[in-house]
Image 1 (spheres, rainbow, N blue to C red):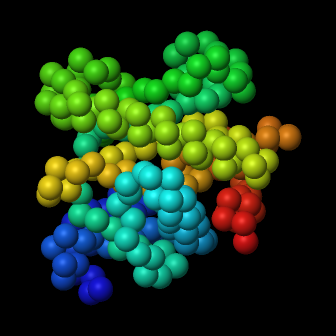
Image 2: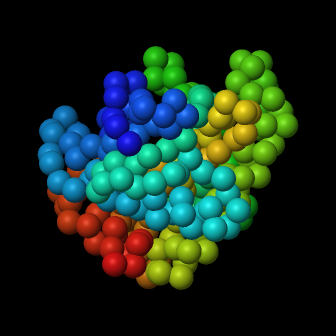
Amino acid sequence: MEKLSQIYEGRYKRIYKTEDESRYLIEYKDDVPVFGVERRYSEGMINNKVTNHFMRLLEEKGIRTHFIEEVSENETLIRKLRIFPVEFIVRNVAAGSLIKRFGFAEGKKLHKTILEFSYKNERLGDPYVNKYHIAAMEICSMEELEFMEKTALKVNEILSEYMDNIGITLVDCKLEFGRDENGEIFLADEISPESTRLWDSRTGEKIDKDRFRRNTDDIDILEETYHRLIGK
């Protein structure tokens, strides 16, 4: 599939048009911005292969995803979707902003899984929103939102069970969805050490990108996490 013009570039990925109008090509970048410093290592390959590993797993479990075909170590062919400007944040253990906003102790297993929504708008600081905001902004119908809520919780259930079996705790994850030209909704974006918080179940050690956010100079941990996640 020929890669044509670039239509998007973020911190960790680029998206290109292809000769097929119903398909995009996503390219995961190896440039790692950590406290303003650009480093290069195999993060693009890790994010690509881990995401595809989980997209295949979820497809097997009946979750529709944007995944079509992995075409290289850091490139994947995906469905063309119109992404809803909402992140679905599923939380199983208290961490990150949940501590700052509600005073939970870090590491507390939540009595009930929390599902939050974040409006994707960098200019506004990606604020947390509720169903009423989403309805007022006409982002999607309430039926569509209910479908995505149920799907996000099902994805969390599948991933949590998978992680438990390999000694990893899925602390939380950020999920995105998009609609195709026929109005069908698919899970989109990525599921990787970049979009999830992952802790070793036995030691509680952070084995995801949070290590960098806490100024820990340890890139090798993501290589180790990668091999644990995909079983290679």
